Length: 192
Image 1 (tube, rainbow, N blue to C red):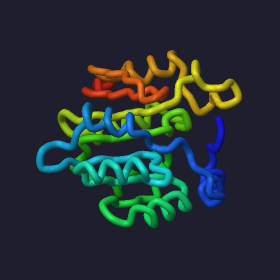
Image 2: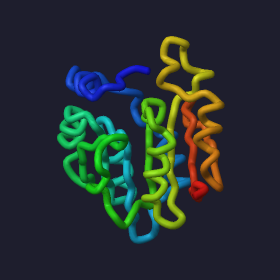
Image 3: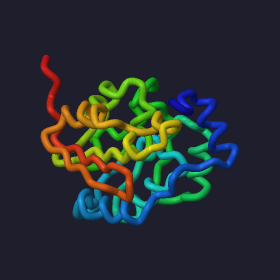
Image 4: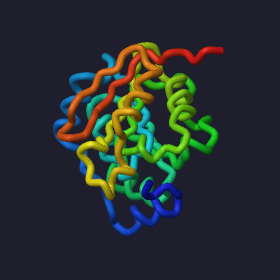
């Protein structure tokens, strides 16, 4: 797995490196499948990086919280998109999530992030508890089958997608120009 330490992510952004830009197809699929509720909704963008997705969600009617653990990423995102997003430096795996809105979110996105999580089940349970009734978590990820072998650490294979999908009542899988877009609804409550 690449860039799994905070200092590596900070250096990545500080060195001017980026990731695959947010595509028109991704934006169109999000608008069609998880539009902002009438009167607006609240979204959380986990691992927001340079803020492209967070800014897009704000532009279509969501009040957005965007979190990343890289100080340099948050600083660059805030500078590029100064309005419409609340930027938070937060590690969703290790930090207290109290800074997040207590009344929950209509949409939670993890774009190009899920493969880097070490404690996936716990993180998804924590995020799932923050979904409002009728809300969705959207995971956008490269697929291992179409990713060069030396880069497969940033992608999910079909087994990992199956494990991610297992905890949800409804899963929709869409193709976003070679990225898998998984829309997860109705978190299944873990057995007590």
